[in-house]
Image (cartoon, rainbow, N blue to C red):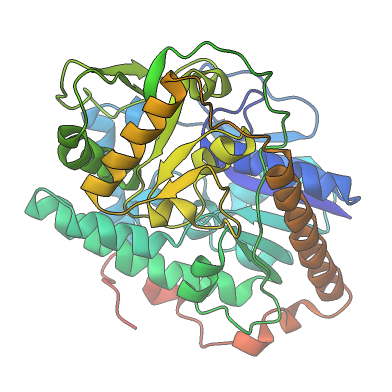
Length: 416
């Protein structure tokens, strides 16, 4: 079976973000189970050249952290003109004919892996041209609605509310048309209305790399890592800085790794902003305790998986544990600022006294790996069954009247 893995960007050979790490884990498991996997996506300007098995669709800047104000304004303007969500408008521009021509460079393929919602929202024909496996990394309309509630201006609130309406319609359409559907947590499956759908199978994830050797290099007491340009992550970081840090002694050193969209927020002197670090694994191991301060969003937190697979002690909020069925014993769960801070302080003191809370994370990683293999295997079986019957039968159990024309018309503003 030859599958074309269609994503907004071609894969990074040295993935750093949670999204890239998740993509690699899924693609590797597809290949392990016998599928031939090719990739299609855009390239960042100046990025590495494509290799055999990769289909470049063109060059684009799509990350907020890399975009100028003028480019962001152009994205919004195009979204309003086209009736697309901003997340899809960034990618929209080739047209269906040219998109099909460029995808044809992959050669004959049996089906698509539609990796997240952005590409099939910008190009709806992707969900119809071939039987597809849709991988929903997040429930995007819920994330947009959260962003609207946390918006700091009326314009931002309006844009996020618009985004939520359009993304909800797009998610419903893509799920309806897909042959098989994966989410990265069972909560996301419920949010997308997939409970009981025979085409649906949740995935577990693993980073798929061995834990680093134990060492005693503890440069920081508390570590946080994330893509802070992504609004849901930033909400958690802002909560940590505003609500948790005031309850911590100033003698504790706090390191925050990850890229910002603009300047980092103001923080006390014991907080260091490191920017994007070259080795996330080395960073988390350089901290005595990891703070998993997630306060919203959907999908699974790859920083949570990395922490648990490394066997590192952590304090986590409940949302940080999405997609994790068994929480390790060296993890404290706390959703209130005082309890979160108390857990961090206690763990730091134990480590400073030589009573390390680090454990072997191999058992956790193996559980995740087995669950990922099971989920991918089920998705491939569902797709294989869809390939053996007429295309119109795929997703027939959830058929609904087509609303493509009004969904993406520039005057459409949503509504169910």
